[in-house]
Length: 122
Image (cartoon, rainbow, N blue to C red):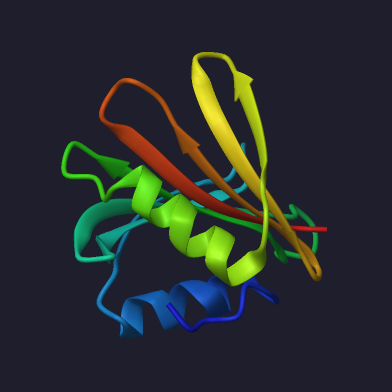
């Protein structure tokens, strides 16, 4: 999306809204903001997790439902861009993880029509 995942979650959210995403909900108990919009030309939910006190973003997750992009194409694209990944089966999902400067990028996929792309700051 060309938005650095850093800083205040509300500032990041306003940048999402400028790109056409719609605010859906805030869960203050779990420190999450949720948005809807299109990512990779597919309908998706964007979930931002943040630190309770500082409101700094901890992670951003894109969750696709039904009309999902090809997991293998994304894995190939990210492997080409970031190098080899670690593959780990867990809880019925398979997670592909790339370690990046300042965080990690994770694709989660399973047999059901759900795919997630996550970035976690360190």
